[in-house]
Length: 326
Length: 225
Image 1 (spheres, rainbow over the protein chains, first blue to last red):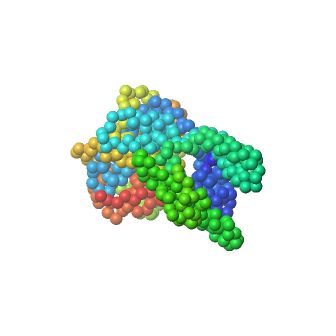
Image 2: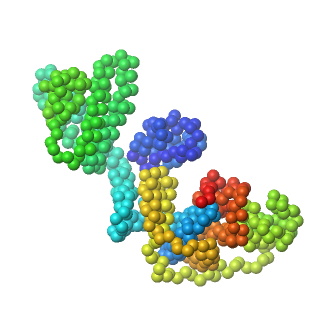
Image 3: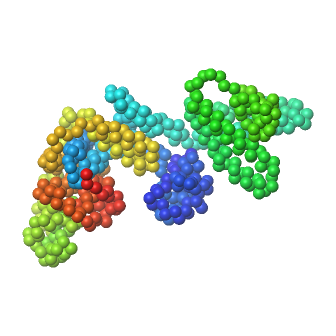
């Protein structure tokens, strides 16, 4: 996560696509033309290269807004009152001029309010205003959830934490990836050592693998990446869907082209299993409040998961009695 | 031959050059302009023009000696529902500029709610509008300008210059409307600058907004209702 990230103004973009050639992470190469904020590393190469000036580097944290005196905000708000009154009168009058006057007064009121201490959505003034809406009394149709969503998006999101501590967050996530990888690697080494009869080495690999799991879980948690279970399920759906729809199909094509049949098989098993996982996550999300116990059965060969013991695994054909119950 | 400067957009009427595009021959004196001649750029009336300063004219106007603003009790009063709606659409635009479409949509939802609960005006008429515009021009802007200048608030001064000019154009348009009625829109377009609120009635939309100088593709064409 960088201090700044690139955004593309679609109205200015002329699709000369120099950004695609210079982006080191492929963040600007998306089907909807919105630069992927999660992949963008904030290097600014695309903005420098764009011949149309369509890409800007936007800061993740905005500077505090200008301080306003009471005399300025007071007199501006008096004008806002008058402009809103004019908007409201014009709204009741017929004709094209009245419609223009209504709109014009709204635009002036917006601009005057912006200068009366409400320029930034992230400012303390806006935060206080939104919070006051939650404590005020309102009719039953008041959209409380809209205010709550704004507060959570603007002031206490996971991203905010990331913003305040970019480097450490980056390091935590790098640590998480490294430890997670080490865990799987040591597990593979342990299996090999067991097979070859080096039981002490195998034991050490197993213990070390578990130790790396402890590290990985802690790093991930401290990085603020563990949300509530509903959002974790959504994250699971997104991850699995990406893998089975976008990641594995080209992997399989490449492996076929290179004649690596073992890779074709492991990718295919994984792709099919991820699709099942995504579906099961979706079901679990729909039934999150349903507390009747459910059992899952894992195929130890391909990673397929079923909610019953099948005769044979529908993906890899392993007999059902090999399945592990959860 | 003298020159006269439009105080809204800065257009200069040069008596020597006239304004042939509007049918005013070169050499036409300011006093001899047809009474319906308006600024060809922003449509401000003749009363919005000042004779160009030749260097030996009268000292600066009385604006500088405005008494300092004093706080009133109701300045920090609660905002009305429609004012909250404007606050929310302002914040929505802030989010739009920052490429935050979800937050923008949420602020717009909140603005829609507040607009829906705003009390409608009972007996509205153009006279009420003109009275409020007059009051803004004689009192509201003077007080706010004095406060912004005194406190060195450049941003507030910028917003006030724009909205005061727009308000003066509104005054001209409303006065014309009272005289001419809907005839003034026959075969003309009506446009609003989405940045400053400037209203243009006519068919020669300037390339940039006469008030805030934004390119004219930021204008919104108003259709009748």
